[in-house]
Amino acid sequence: MTRLTSAFILIVAMSLTTVQAGESAFKAGPVFEKFGKHAAVPGVTIAPEQSFKVAFDVADGAQTGALNQHFNKLARFINMHVANGARLENLQLALVVHGSATLDVVNNKYYKKRTGEKNANAELLKALQEKGVRVIVCGQSSAKHGVSKDMLIEGVEMDLSAMTAHARLAQEGYTTNPF
Image (cartoon, rainbow, N blue to C red; front, top):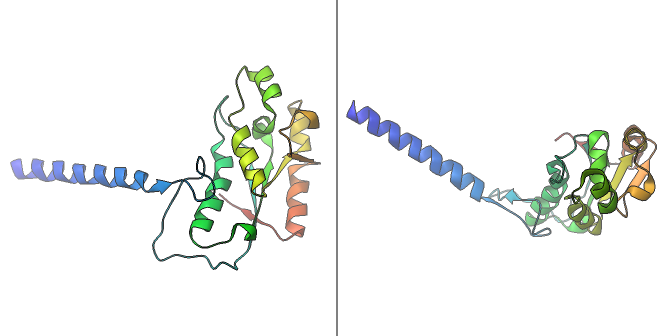
């Protein structure tokens, strides 16, 4: 019984160490130092000439005052690809926002008026836009949530619908990221 207990304790301790080591493997950078944590994958590289045109679809909004982790995936995509050899100029990303996530792309003035808090997504969205990411909000979701163009974070585009935005992006050669 003592050996069994000792073995059990050893297995539990080893598994906890593995979990902790796994979480610590995720680091931000090299493009975004505050966003987009990713883990190194030894032996995997991206050819510098490889180009990507990827659209991300986000419908789920963040909790009030919190960062939308679905938006953070674009920073992660950029960081992990550049860290593994891709050139930033070869990454063309678009973020299509609809549903309850529509409120996550409104400017701080409107967000604070509506929620009483600062929009935690504003800094990330600005950083993404500075690296060439297009942010497109659904006009139908905007109408449903009472959001007009003048309420959006600067640089956020509005299209007729999320469906329209995805159709246009597909015609421009973008694939849709399923994650």
